[in-house]
Image (cartoon, rainbow, N blue to C red; front, side, top):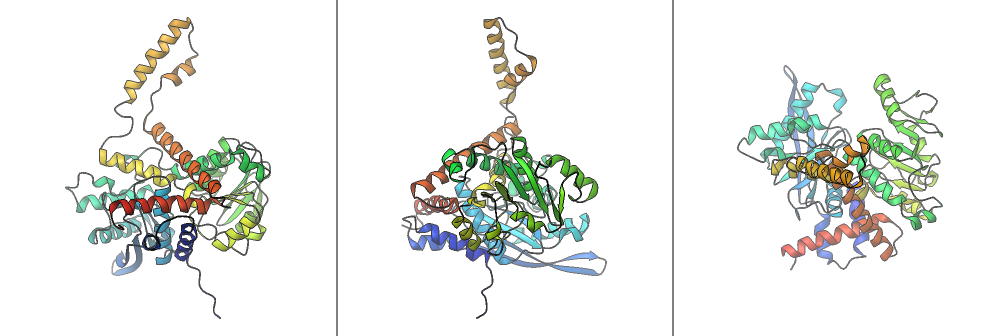
Length: 471
């Protein structure tokens, strides 16, 4: 019998079906929640040079409209296909619900290797893709709000925003059509590192729960935890950086061309500089080169962070995983069959649905900034600083003591956009973890992923039921 091909989207739907057994929601509503509401598959030509054109395959999927606008990244990769985009759009729906961000889920992508095209061509491809979205009403601040994903960044988001504004010059909230933009184009401070910072907050919360760490034979807290990171892109780099700053030891990092390993610890910022200078993470100081990056996934460590692409931990390598905690910074890095093997081994998995939601949280803040037309803290920062200064002066006068200069400045400082964004992200990640950990324990579940899906499903169902869609 021929083997059934792997379907990422089916796997997401299977997770929903399994988790829904622990809810009281009607089957018809669960069936609705699983489906993608709108799928736009397109092929468009772009002039590569005089007399030569290339046709590109691209997608935009809107999974759920229980909240609008819908939200989700755009990726540039040769692996882009309809199944992948549908799955990622579905995950966005559940992710937004989990962290209480009022968006439905969406995702988009172009089947392309961005490294093979110069900036001028990438700009033409991006603008043409955006015009296709505009033509079918698949983009807009109240309709569908894309963001960066694998292979894209602030530059591409700026091109998308500019193209949208060119088609909609009367749209006063037009810059809210996309998030992850550069600061000069009404982006928001803290967005670049948001997903990695969210990963850090999520792992920190998980390892601080005493009873959970005792079961894994680990001490609570991050200091001393040995961590291996797969992928040193935006998410992997900032995750490793913040974890290291809080006392964790980064012993291994894998990239597409190989990995480096040092049980004494790798300085993440020094490694990043080394890569910028040499074009590779290999041959870094005293670290051992690992020719096969997949091999590092099987090294002994406390926490393994897959921060690259989906389906990296499979039934083939799951039995060799020695990490006590797997923290899913990427989307769908662990297959369902692999997860069963890992759970049976007692591995604690912090699911992607929760852990990499920092990006959409801060994207939500950027969208709010764009439609309110004022940055966070702009109106209140100076007022709060003056109030803080009066309080400090009163304290000094009453106690007849002059505070040390650095401490005085810290007490007086008011919160600007960067501080408020990070504070909001931290609060959301803490509350979301408390919710899913509580559900896991109250229902006596083995894993956080099922708990996260239960939490999201119930919130989405409430939204549909209160709209009157399912009386």
